[in-house]
Image 1 (tube, rainbow, N blue to C red):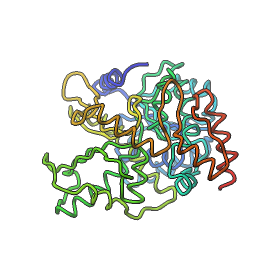
Image 2: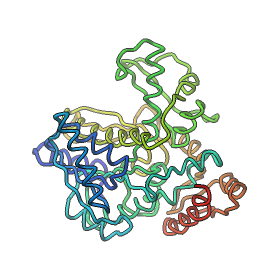
Image 3: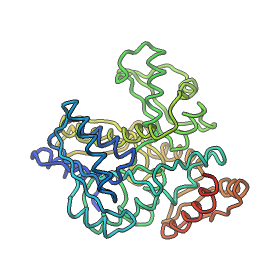
Length: 391
């Protein structure tokens, strides 16, 4: 498997040569539909957008309305291709489509159970989302296994609990996603709203926020406005100058009203879009652009990351304002709150606290360590013994 930097430079060669750039969206649920709409809205004739899933008829309906709406907006410039009849539980089926479409980007927006919000069960009972990691990893595991078999060099993005899923794949010696979407990107706009109002800043883009934390803190800050006594890494600047502002006040201000239905997936789709667009824009404009992404390059938690195309070679690297040791320590504390003690040697390790809570709340015993090869068994147990009785 090639490195992120090798993949970025392969992409640069195609962009510079005017070749078509193929972006494959695996799963056309609400996240995939929003993402397709956002990409179409770029009105970029160099993009070839391929949607991959099982139900070709349903995907055709979704594509038709997105194309129609984009045409009304006079933005329909990208090619859209539908690849139906693809089973994400079948590695061979995925490998076949990867060889056929030869993507430059892959976005995994599939879910094991479409439309089911695991957090509605876990937050009220456990205050920890990490319990669902065995369910989150399964389809992504299949996609990346097929990715390796097909010799794919696409820049890959995962949507489901990347803080732990991507490191889990990497620790098992498998091909793994380059980036994850979500989490920090959901918090940063809320922070910008508060900072802009407090300092009278008209352009939100003048506010530069850098944040290090895992999925847990996306949830607890947006729901409750605090960090559960974990000191995060947070920098808030305007036009290059650090602002004098109480970070606790910023966290408190993040609890703004939001819908709880699938409209929330606009945020996750926007995070996927941000990664893709930032990479394309950095290369085309020869700029350095900072993104926030969970699980990047197989690291646990969420990180600020730079796409730097200011030189001949494109480089991706972790934000240099903090050391890797600092960021890893914060993320370890953050994801511990989410029920994950560690990910190592192909095993996801639950915290003792989570295991105890699951036993108390649901009378279900979790293993301390879950091997990647046994994730399907644990996922089945979670589904039958916790999800189904609590729907």
